[in-house]
Amino acid sequence: MARELGPRGVHIAYVVVDAVIDLEWTRKRWPDRPDDFFIKPRAIADEIWHVVHQDRSAWSFNVELRPFGEAW
View 1 (cartoon, helix red, strand yellow):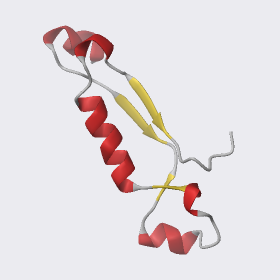
View 2 (view 1 turned 90 degrees about the vertical axis):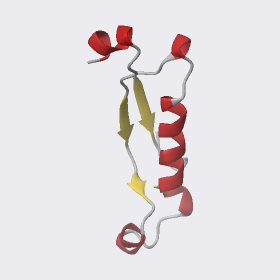
View 3 (view 1 turned 60 degrees about the vertical axis):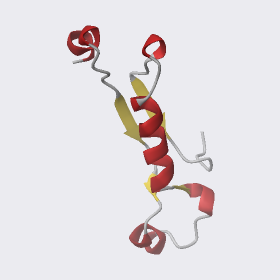
């Protein structure tokens, strides 16, 4: 899609959310995990906003989101 639509000015991006999203039910599921284990929904939205509004000279295609507490 990116190769076909990019030249037409359509930004295609693949966003991977590799995290447990900070929601009421996920907090109950992992009650002993620290805050940095979770990714905040607002942080996901902010990054999507960033990708959507990127300068055309530096479009991202593959974006991976992980929480700070991720054990690499």
